[in-house]
Every structure is written in C-alpha cells, then in structure tokens.
Image (cartoon, rainbow, N blue to C red; front, top):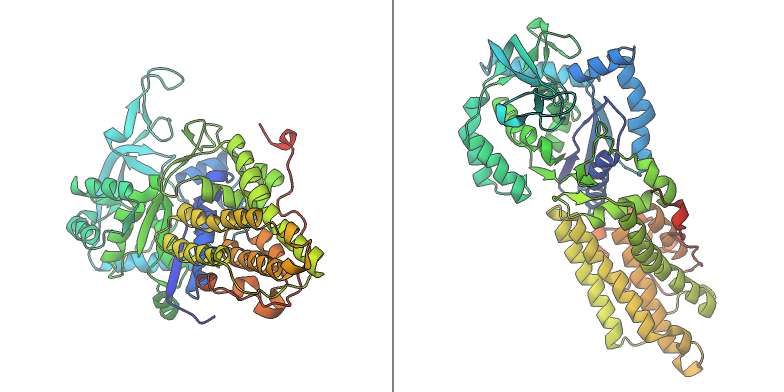
Length: 529
C-alpha cells in the first residue's frame, strides 16, 4: 500500500487524577476506528493519545493519597490508562505524557518564542478558579447552590463544587490580539469546528470578546517551569495543548513535524473551547498552522447525566468487555450513538444490539455461509456461473456501501459509516433466505446456481471483513482466516478499504473453513444490571 496524504489524528490527553471510564474509551475507539480506516486507505496515518499529568488537581490528588504527583501519575498510567488501550484494542502510534522530557523541551521552546515575540507579558489577576476544570470561570459558568453541603456557595456548573477566589501575579498570553483572526478562520474554513452546534457556540463565544489568558501559576510548583522565570509554572491547559506538536517533534525534529502537522483533533464538546479558540490562537502567535479540524463529539449519558466518576455514574470499560468482548464494545458505541451528539448508554440497549446485530445479523451470517461451503463443496469456494439480477443487486449494495461508508468517515459521521456497511449484512441475509441454497443443494440441475449463490455470499463476506476490520478487528480477523483469504489476497489490514466494493477479489478454489460463532450467545444473567 503506497503512502497517501498525511492524516494525523489526536485524541485529547486524559487527566490522571482518576481511572478511565467508558466516556474516555468512547473517544479512543472513535479515533482508532477513523485512523484504522485512513491507514487502510493508504494514507500516511498517525494516531496520538496520552495523559495530562500536571496542575493543581493532580497535586492535590497525589497529596490526598500520600504520594508524589509523579509517582501517582506513573501508577495511574501503567495500571489504568495503558491497559485501557489494550482492553479496547486501540492501535495508537504514540502515547505522550506531559511529564516526558520531549514534551517539556518543546513547551519551553514554544513559550520562549512567544515571549521573545511580545505575545507574553506579566500582570496581576484575580478571579473565580475551579480546581476541577483547572480554569478561571466567568460568573455565568457558576451557580449558587441552595441545598446540600455547599448551600449558599458559588459552585462550578460542571463539577458542582465550590470555586476558589485566587489573586496572583501571572504571565499572560495576548489572546485578545487574535479575536478577528479566529473569526476569519471560522468563516474561511466552515468545517474547522464541527459539528455545527459546537461551531455556532464557539463563534458566539469569540464574538463576545476575548480576554488575555493567564498562562502561569506561582502558588504551586507541579508543572513545567517558565523558562525565564523559574518561580512560575505553566498553566496546565497551555502546557497540555502543546502535546499535539511536542509529540511530533516541534522544535527538535522539523522533518517529522512538517510531515505530520496539522492534525485533526477529536475532543469532547466540553473542551472544544480550549481546542478551537485558545489552541489556534497559540499556534498563530508562534507562526504555525492551526489544526486541520476540531471535532467536538457529544457526551455519554447514563441515567440522563454525563458520565462522571465524582457523581458515581462512571462505568469502567472492563465491566462491558468482560461480558461482551472488545469488538462488541467498539461496535456498540460507534453504531448506537450519532457521532457528534450526546448519546445514552444502557445495558438493555447494548444487550439487544449485541444479540440482534452482531450475533444474529453478522455472526450468524458468517457461520451459515462458511458452513454451507464446507458442507456442499468440501470447503473449496465454487466458481460462480452466470449472475442473475439478485446476484447483481448484491454486488451493487456492496459497491454502494463501500463508497457511502468512506464518504461518511471523511466527515467523521462514524455512525453513518456503520449503517452503510450494515446494508450489506441485511442484503446478504435476505439474499440467502430468498435463494435457499439448502434447497438448491438437493438437485444436480441446480448445482451451478448453488455455486453462484455461495460464491456471491462468500465474496460479500470478504467485503464485510475488510470494511468492518477497523470496527471489530478481532472478529474480522477470524472471518478472514475462515475465508482462506490471506494466502491469496494477503493480510486483512493490508487490504485497501476503499477497494472493498470491487467485486470478485476472492478467487474460486479458496479454502473455506467452518467458523465458530463470532459473537456467542450471552445469557441475561451474565449482563450487569
């Protein structure tokens, strides 16, 4: 596969104050699916994820647990965040930690440039600070509680915890200088911020006026020191945003940086403002291109509330994968939720989709077809005779699904991509029901027709294996092996995904083997309540 255009996708880096929940895993799977698709399309693809390890919240969490911030971060990364990637089969190319030396070096180079060019100055700031968000808040970001432990106090709307009033001498970034340039960027590139609801919110925010940004703290020392003033550390968000360029060699490896940048940034909508306002302004100040796109996806809701450890609505990914497996986890969240919108998780919906779509829809189809080739042709794929209208209809569905799925991925409509691919599953199941190969197998005069039907169904499975490999890599690898495809076509992930709809790739004579259930039946007693 030749290297196509550069496609660099970055997830947000996740805060190590706690263990991951399925909201984090949702972002990781979406990013992984999209980059797997681009990689199989021949693009020069790079997937970055990682952890955000500085700031006051980490310091306080570590102290509360009687350890150092670095020891806390090391433990969380090694015991929780890296294992998460294995649990849900993430094929990331890099993992950045903001405590990495390469990151600290890049941050200092970037800061020094902005300081030398006059974009950073010192001043005094007083404001409402939320430690949970690591962010100064405006009054409309806060609310006064009437009941509970914090009755009568101003609390953050996101964390429902009291804010602190801070006053300190800080260094400031001249973000207000970039208001018009940001508005021009949004107008000239309408897809820079997506989906539309997030874009509208961002434009409204910037039109309301931008203040300069406090980018240092002197009240604690857990962070990267300001190069020209070691009594200050860099504000955690300013530090964290730079991971997207520190990981690809900003300031130290120009060749790799120029090869990769700019990135597509996949973030939760609650942090879109940092990525679509502060981040491009920082890059403009440094004379760098803004990101290619910032896509702010919706929240996962449980019982109508955003997934949250502090509110005890957090569900660990292993709670799902231990019962349903990694493939089902990946499929469910990418299919059941319109990517970009909020989506509700329930065990009932997961269980129903697993049974109807994966076990009965796709898994049973694969088992039936391979079993019939094994039974009626001793596991040797028959050659098709003349194609009928029904066969040609299958070929058209496969071709259309491939192009529709690719178009949907390009605009990050992941759910639409899966819906397009699933038309093949539905078409093949209907085709087999109507063609009745078990009836055709009873007479010699319909033997040629049986061969055509089973070739058509098997070749349809070949296309499905390729198209679904970024989604359910474990199950499709088993299917690829059962189709005997590797000896004649090569490895599954080496297949060009945009060519999956080209008919007739699996040659007659391929060795087909019977396939065990890809998605075994799960008893309701095994499903967590």
